[in-house]
View 1 (cartoon, rainbow, N blue to C red):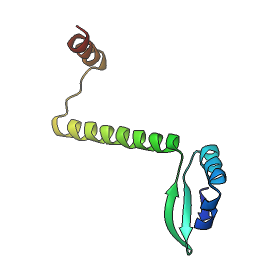
View 2: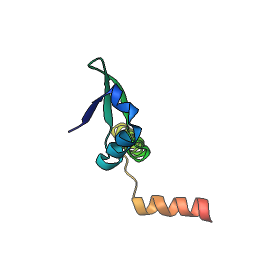
View 3: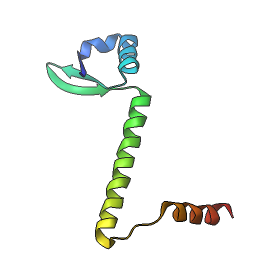
View 4: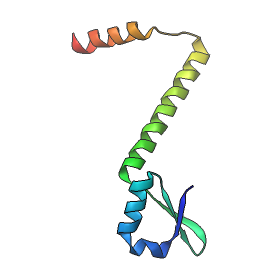
Length: 87
């Protein structure tokens, strides 16, 4: 369950930092009872960005397959990349 904290809790940055690192999820900060900010650890942010990039790549591959219905053998593709980039 997400942590929701009032903006006044940002005065204690160590506590917020500990929560972010321990729970490995964002902390939602409210201002006057409404959502205002999201605070998270760098590790959580980087993982989120990696997941978004992976989802985007998968979606792009699915779209490409839908257009041309062509699949590539993974071993052949990797061998081709090795030859191209590593001689």
